[in-house]
Length: 103
Image 1 (cartoon, rainbow, N blue to C red):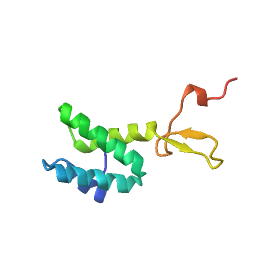
Image 2: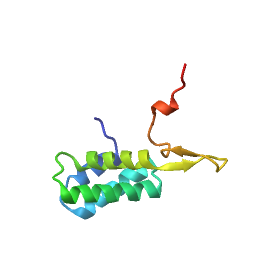
Image 3: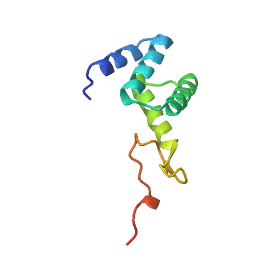
C-alpha cells in the first residue's frame, strides 16, 4: 500500500504509544476522508472499545480504517425528498441482494 503526505504521517503517529497521537491520527484520517461527525464518533467509540478489550496486532491505522468502514456501512442518510433513507453514508460502496434487479 502506498501512502502519501499527511496520511503517511498519520500512520507513523498512530504506531507510536501515545493515546493522544492515536487520536490525532484518527482525526487526520477522518479529515482526509471528509467523514461526517456521526460516523467519526461511532467509529472512534468502536475502535477504543475494541482496543481496550483485545490486542490489536499490526498498524493501528488499519484497525481505525476498519472501524470507519463499519460506521459508514451502519449509518443511514435521508434522500432529498426526506421521505426515504439510504443505507450507508455514501463513503462505502454497499450492495445487497435487495438492491439488485431481478430478471
